[in-house]
Structure formats: C-alpha cells, structure tokens
Length: 161
Image (tube, rainbow, N blue to C red; front, top):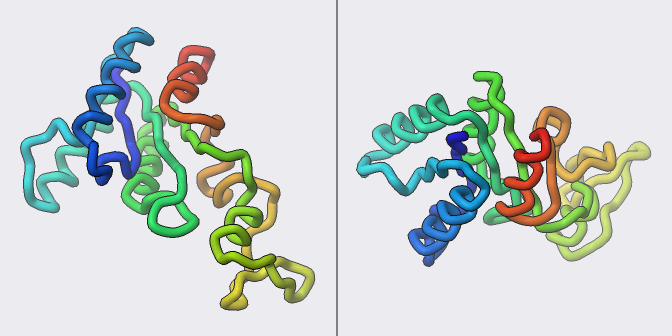
C-alpha cells in the first residue's frame, strides 16, 4: 500500500532523518511511504497542492496526532485527515499517550480543570469536551487511534486498519 504520513514531523530539526526512518519502517511492513518532504514545491500553494495530490494517490493515511504547539494536534494534519476521510481512505491516528482530552488540557494548563454548569472548563472559562475521548470527537470518532508511534500505526493498518 501507499501510505501518506501526516503530521508535524516535517517541522522537526531532524525531519529528513525522520523521513528516512519512516520510509524504512513502512518498507519493512511492505508499504511505500508518501512523505510531504519529498515534494519540490516551495510556495504555500504549491506545497498544499502537492500534499493533496499525495493524499489522493495514497491507499491510507497514518497521522501523528500528538499535541503540537499546544494541547491539540497540528492543524495542517487535521486538514489532511479530514481530506482523506472525505475521500473514504482509511486513517489511523497515533498518540504517545492514552490520556483523555480533559486530562491533557489540565496537564497542559498546569492546573486542574474548573467546572461550570456541571461541565469542565479550562482556565479561560471555555468548556472542555468531556466524552472520555483522547481527541476532539471529530477525530476520535471516525479514526482508529493507537497508542505509540508510526510502528504501532503500521501494525494497526496491517491488522485491519
């Protein structure tokens, strides 16, 4: 299978080394990695179009949904996941932790969640989704989520994605 690797890993300081390890892991599982770093585009529109084309050509998407620059997944990754879902492609998301959204928000803000009207709220008084899910319901419901990293997501894909 051709697998698009979605996630903020392209922003890592060792992004090209990460991509090589990811390609090797996919190849070891019998798949071809489609990595956003492989494109030659340098403009925002060009990169967007190239990544969309890669997702269209993929058989599945594996998405790093770990918190990025805050307590939520990378917004670009969320767009890629939504696009893949709209195309009917299988998407497996992976997270390093089993913590729920409420646990993650409390940890991220460094204090327990407050409560208002019987619902948890963050330090700004905004309600925190509390379905006991690991991510916002718009990701947690349609995706298969695994704990771990790329290797665990590959194993989940091999075992029925």
